[in-house]
Image (cartoon, one colour):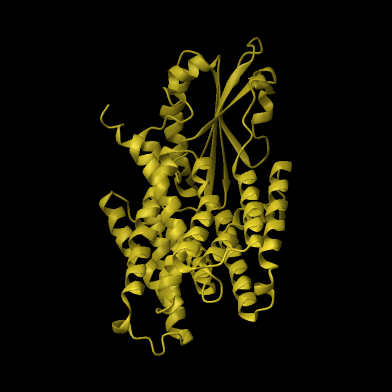
Length: 432
């Protein structure tokens, strides 16, 4: 019992950290770059934090990354940290911290449009409405006179859009890449590489000319320390913990809390002006993000609209079915328990063998189980696993999965092979 008690205060504490700390990094960045060249500030911050996090990941048992994992983390680290965050911080020379945070909130909306363009993934009407609201909000924000009439502000806005494009592209591509199984180690590797690129840019761009570290004021030094210790290490650790202990939609609330925190801190501590037009833009933008990050909950009547089993099963030439135990046609409406996971293509066969040896029998031998489908599909360096089990009712599922039946039951050996935790499952009513 004692092992579960810390979660009662750890989860809200971690949410407070990602809300307040990440929201405050915009102002801390602004403070730091008043005296430290922006590329050097960001590069040294990420490189230092990366070294510390990499050491911590080794202490927690992370293995040695493969050459492929280094290549993939380099790609993502350059996009996310060097181009993305590095550009965002650089833009704060011309635009105040609260406005930068609000413009950054456009990223989830941009990802929707990028997914539509790149993969033809048409969003739902709810998502389209949210994106439209966000675009109107962004127009209100950047269309203000003090932005449109100032050349440096326009440069800053252009650089911010470059940053969120890089963030969006990296966010889409990372799901298809083989990354280290340890999220802590993966983040550390991205910071090391992204930080190194930013340092190289700093030393070759001439921004270090005249910089005297020994003359830095206390505010710049403490801002840098805060960004390394809290902005990178503490906040990321909290974020990583929440990905395991909470749900993605709850963690995503940081997308619309962080800009509010940044705007309020900039107004309170840095005398940054918040115009009425900025407030209207903030409401529109953040409402759009809420539309995208929240899902409509199923009504009680969902039990009356069962889906055909065939509608859940992938049927194309790229998908391989390893196990296909269909429920009897005489079975009435059943509950399908759907799990998705990812392994590297290199580890795929090991996972398949493990699943057929241990996971499949575990399901099949459990009372109340009516069938099982196990499929996999390889996409580049990543293999996607799909396991659908059929149950006579929710009581049988709860008996099998325990109190937190929305989480998958994973064997320790599975976790070693998966690229992500794969802990969340979906449930659907189906008919045979």
